[in-house]
Amino acid sequence: MFQGMGLKWSALLYLPLVLSAQTATQSSPNKYVGSQACKTCHPDVWLNFYKNPHARPDTGCEGCHGPGGDHVAAHGGKATIRAFSTFTPAQAQEACLSCHAKDVSRANINHSPHTNADIVCTNCHSIHKPATPRFLLAKTQTELCYSCHPAERAAFEMPSKHRVNEGVVQCSDCHNPHGAPNTTVRMGGSTAMLQPAFDNEEPCLKCHVDKRGPFVFEHPSVRIEGCEACHMPHGSMNAKLLRRPVVFTLCLECHNGAGTFGRENLGVFEPSSMHNLLDPTYQHCTLCHVRIHGSNADPTFLR
Image 1 (cartoon, rainbow, N blue to C red):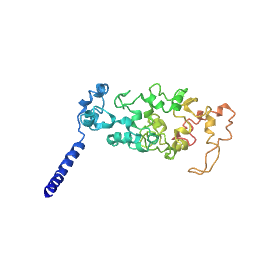
Image 2 (cartoon, one colour):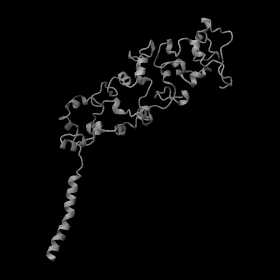
Image 3 (tube, rainbow, N blue to C red):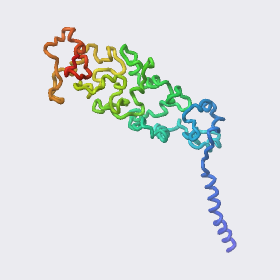
Image 4 (cartoon, rainbow, N blue to C red):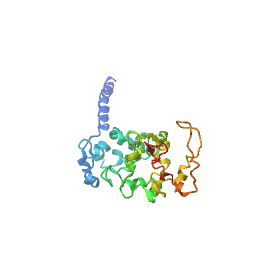
């Protein structure tokens, strides 16, 4: 009897050692193996990866994909590595932001319209086979933006346009695709991810600096509503990207005498009775009011 109990007690004494050995075998840590080990199965990626800014000694393949020990031991398989093709949009963005969150240009990415629409880093960037070395874009910048913004593509084919297709400017000159703080125009209500100029003003002023001011006599619509009150930013059938083909019809949208508001509580001035708007002479307001964006000499923006 006691002899049998002795065997049972001895088995119980060895049981923790057996369990600990099994646990150690099952939970052996996934080890880093270095980027060189990836070359055997991924030669197409390896061929040009040395040119990639991610190909640094402290990052390499495992900087994004995690330790590759289990992946090599299993001879491949998405279940043994951090495979971005299996990630949800939130997971993919979180992986990239683990390094890139410190960049000021991406400070608003979690609140941008792109992120809210589940457009994340891997939708626009190709780390392994980029079409452009700069920014590692999956396509050239214009083609990449046009793939989701066909209306803007059509606008850049109009007679009066910003020369994006010609390569003079590009989308990121005016927009920050990662999200941007709202500019001061439109009461800060723009959702176009505009890249502010001079801290918080419209990006138009980066090129059109003569329209910036400050002016002694400001045109309120320029300061409050911004350039888009009168101009189509991408392209227009009308000269100078104007919203209407005839200048006076554009001016009359505001200058109709309606309202009592503004700094002097006078509303918007209507045209003088001496202006016969049936006369072509008076249908081109800016022939006389040449300083329409603001003036330091005349409150009515005359020459």
